Structure formats: structure tokens, C-alpha cells
Length: 84
Image (cartoon, rainbow, N blue to C red):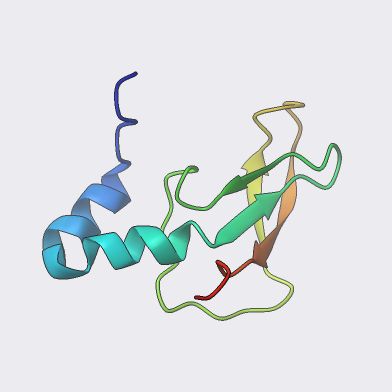
């Protein structure tokens, strides 16, 4: 299976900070975007975004759900990896 293509933002930041590319991805994969309608969730990284050194509570982002197709304000949750 081919590796997923990086978004423009991901390509830009991994090229600007090549020594931190793995950390950018690791931290971004700890943040999840959750659909308020069907509860489908995916990591910020898989959506093409980056959350590096981020902290927030109650953050929401406008997005179209890949599962139910509804465009709405999706909740953003931080779920640190165990032991991380």
C-alpha cells in the first residue's frame, strides 16, 4: 500500500524543520478531530494538519466529516500516547 501523500502544510514544515519532522508527526497524531454527529474521529495529522507544541481546551475546527459527510464544527481532543 503506498504511503499517504503529505499535505502542503506538512511538506512545508517538515522541510523547514527536518530534524523535527518525526516529532511534528508524533505530536500531531496525539490530537484527534471528532465529528459531533457520528463520532467519527481521525488524527490531526491524517487530516493533513499539524499540532506541534499545541495546548488548548474546547478547540473546534470546521470540517466535513469523512464518514457522514456533514460539514460542522468538530471537537479537537488531545490524547497523549501512553508513556509519552
